[in-house]
Length: 417
Image 1 (tube, rainbow, N blue to C red):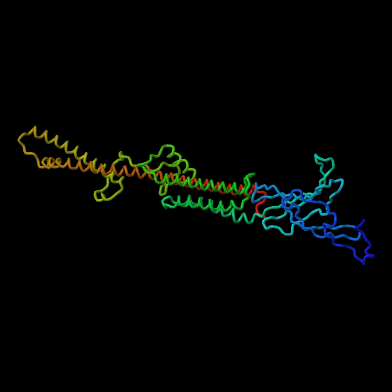
Image 2: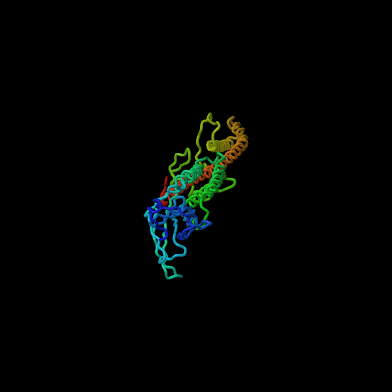
């Protein structure tokens, strides 16, 4: 009643501005305030009108506590509440009402959007007191803008993973296959250290982006281990390793058939047995004398077998002729041996030298055959390395695609611009 007056009696004055400390004002505070001063309002003047109504609209900066859920970071929504009520008056002494059904934000950080806001009035009973207490709770749901994180975190990570996958197309003989994998692993580690600074530091939940980065890190580390295995297979030879039966069956028969691979220059069907060394029991192949030039070890072995067969045939003919000569000598003693017999005995003296030459040539062909067998084993190991390389290329490509799609489709929303 003391704040009412007749404006006509006071020169038409209808309202006054009075400092708040000279009037009573309700002790409405924010319960979940995180401000050091607890009350973040500025004490502006109270507008008192001639009808006795008072208008007190103090500006303020309110800081509240919100429980952050980063399970879907950076595709997350955060829910924050701002609870206002009287600190000392119960609901029977003072009541609080809503004047706005909705509200919005006019200036906020560019990392967030405001998809939903609401407020509600609650009349609650406390266990300490029988009187009800009334409060107004403003619920703010903010959504993180994902465009920045998508193009600055996810896209570079996918590119790094693609480089790790493309490393399996690099030939092992280039010498940079393992260096490329280690370099990609180091670059991804540095990139993840930069990403960790932008992610909220909490142990309540593992963010979706962190799970994806851990999967990519595991994939890149596994690609380095696979590259080491591929290089190990590629540089094996007959002197150090012997290919076991199961490795030969799996990596030279089954997997090449599944992956539709075959040896370069080999016209055999998928899954056929690899080239085997030439057996020493091959039938002799007769080449003209003018064609005894430089050939492969297989042709040289065939030539040796051909010469050896001709040499044995010549010895058998000479032995038969000697028997006929001996029979003629016993039947007609005192006759002179023909010139052909003398020539035959002269040729027999060269049999020893020819036999030694054949032994030396056979030794050479044996060495060449062993080299062919060793080269064949080396080619088997290199082909097994190619099979593992192709298998890893397919597996890690599918893993990267599936992991990326799983992250994108499991998110509540993908891109919020």
